[in-house]
Length: 282
Image 1 (tube, rainbow, N blue to C red):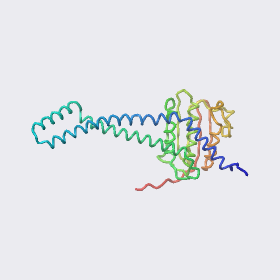
Image 2: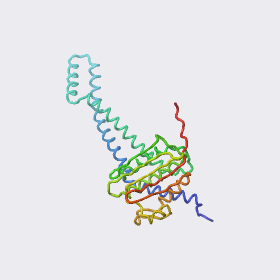
Image 3: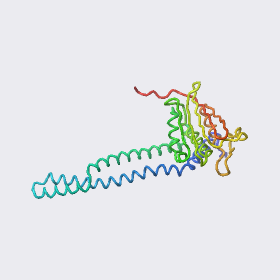
């Protein structure tokens, strides 16, 4: 019995393996990006829990005052209300509660978006071809790679049009973008550098350029960088499959990928067929 996978199955397995390897490189940063909003959401909820106990006591006293007919008891309750108002700035607590909830909703949205980005990136949607907005994918991939880049890499976005649509497997294009971002970060190293992501339309095609100010690729290595298992990285620092898989994904999408590099300037140029995006309701 022949248990060997056919070429398409093998390619999908390699793609998923490389995708997981990329996530493995970013896992610490992704955990940090999740921990930050979760941390301040918990802090906000703890504060709101304290405020809620004060509000509950205050409302209880107001209800007691409303229901009490005995004048002496009313005076005592009024004194308790005055003491609570003097001790706690109720108006400030109400205002701060609104801000705590607003900040927590924003933080929860950040967690939700990052989890959705992770799910989209890691999900093997090889058969899921769909109209895909390129800039949304770029932003989602940048969110996943944010911690990898933000300490020393200045990211510049130069989009000629608000939206650019293509018929794509979203996780495949995300894998290409992620590989480009990780390579750029590693090329820049620990030094401050820039990464520019530029999109425009040329001859009806999308031209996506990813430019970094890293160490560059040597002239000897440049002809081979899209070959399987070729790598300029140290042993254990890369699989040698990243750019080969990127080349294959771009070809599957009917596009081309090329590179120019000199010390301090590397530019990957990706051309992809453009489609008309979904019509928005007026």
